[in-house]
Image (cartoon, rainbow, N blue to C red; front, side):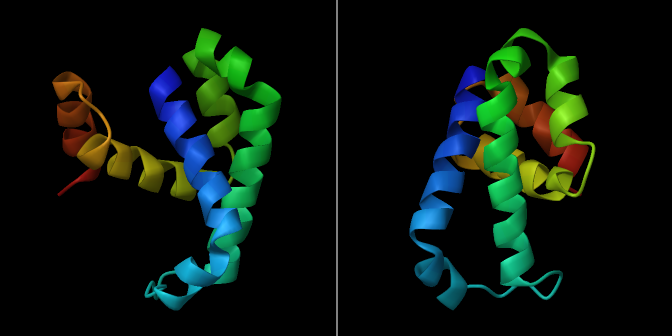
Length: 101
């Protein structure tokens, strides 16, 4: 969990700092870039306020990040972290089973 939360936090920072780069490559018809950027900002704020408690309790993680539409952003980041950042094979398999068809 610590490495996942760190990965999400770092991506939120990078997304904010390099928004023009991300905007140019945006091809999602599902939602606008501005809305995705808003979800990233909300997620970053939640992580700043609750990260310590999230590390202690998965319930806090789910209560804070899966209560609103930030769940869309967080799920996307979990899938990408499992695909590229995680070394934990059980985590990768669980994410694959839950989120990939």
